[in-house]
Length: 40
Image 1: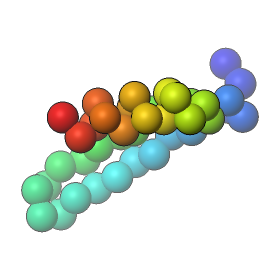
Image 2 (image 1 turned 90 degrees about the horizontal axis):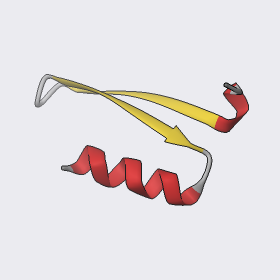
Image 3 (image 1 turned 90 degrees about the vertical axis):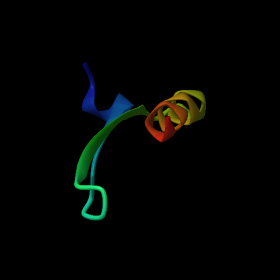
């Protein structure tokens, strides 16, 4: 795995007390899919 091809985001929401890890690829299409998955 190449770190330049993948991005990890750790987002914490105090209001909902939820910790969300968004695993994204630097591809716009993959970003959109990951974003939609998190929004569910």
